[in-house]
Amino acid sequence: GGSSSGGGGGRSGALSPPPVAEEFQRIDVNPPKGTRDFPPEDMRLRNWLFNHFREVSRLFGFEEVDYPVLESEALFIRKAGEEIRDQLYCFEDRGNRRVALRPELTPSLARLVIQKGKSLSLPLKWFAVGQCWRYERMTRGRRREHYQWNMDILGVPEVTAEAELISSIVTFFKRIGISESDVGFKVSSRKVLQEVLRCYSVPENLFGKVCIVIDKIEKIPIDEIKRELKATGLSEEAIEELLQVLSIKSLTKLEEILGGSGEAIADLKQLFLLAEKFGYSEWIQFDASVVRGLAYYTGIVFEGFDREGKLRAICGGGRYDRLLSTFGGDDIPACGFGFGDAVIVELLKEKGLLPELSLEVDNIVCALDYDLQGVAATVATKLRGKGQSVDLVLESKPLKWVFKRAARANAERLILVGNTEWQKGMVGVKILSSGEQYEIKLDELE
Ligand SMILES: OCc1cccc(Br)n1
Image (cartoon, rainbow, N blue to C red):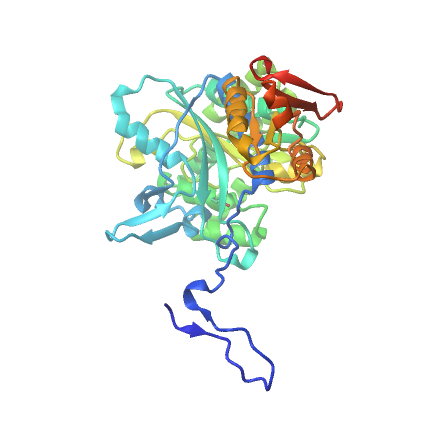
């Protein structure tokens, strides 16, 4: 065994514990920094949330997909200065391959779509609920993993796709009791930025970088924003015009500035028209300052926010028509969103909307004598065959213990297998809510 460590007297007279061999040293029982365990109570909340994600995706006719949590690092290497890149959880594996824990799901979707190529019938509507990772210096004590619900539509160039996606998120919010008085969506289009930058003949390849700087507009001082924009090569004039346009909060005003002929205005007008038809006009507002922090968006972008302004963005997404070609594939028009599992729970807590979820078991089955354990197993199997859940007591326990367990499991019924009753082929039944109890033949037990 390992060398003994610690222990050993030293204090006069006091008996110190015997040294603990290395292999029995107590490990750190906490999960790695920034990660979470999901013990039953937390797992019930997580399942409740994910079941709503999945049910809404089903209502919208989406198919579930998933990808490896480990991807080639190359999938996420983009040069636009994104935070998601700076915090990539990447390493070299034993085969000397550069790999990364996925920080988002969209690049994996793009990879799979390219891999499947012509065999896919468009439009495709896929959803996923996957764990995503980042390696952030724990200076801010923030999480390093979260689960993200994604819905994506590929093959639809019109903004009906974006309108459909926002409708799915509104549907989700309504299901969990969140209304338009609690949250809203800021909606814009990167084509607004594009049209301004084109006026100043800014090269296309700077577009992603400029967006990433602007996405930080509410997170860092405006002087820093201007400095970083200048560093990308933008002229003072272009920067001033850009910041001016970004402060616009009405489509009419935007039209005055950009003129009515550009795609940005047309897309946004169409989206607001569709919002009316979907019935979620009250949930959305135009806000030119929304650009989102992912370089690959090319058109409409949107983000869900809490109207009290206490929390970070709840969800976000947009159009990314050029992502596939960055991986060498043929471009397919695409749009999608990501919805994390953290902020929404904070919002539900704020609103007192967290559901009360407890363990629910239909039956506790217990043998009163050890030699009836087999009969108890038969009873449990019969009930399970009828779709009833059974917590079968697996060892001799005092009745007091059994009642306590039944209460904790909110069991509907307690089935007791005792010698007296079993002599008559009967078992004892106690309905825990009413206290009613009776004996019944095993084959009459429902
Ligand atoms: O939303 C950014 C992000 C990506 C991966 C993991 C976590 Br926690 N957060």
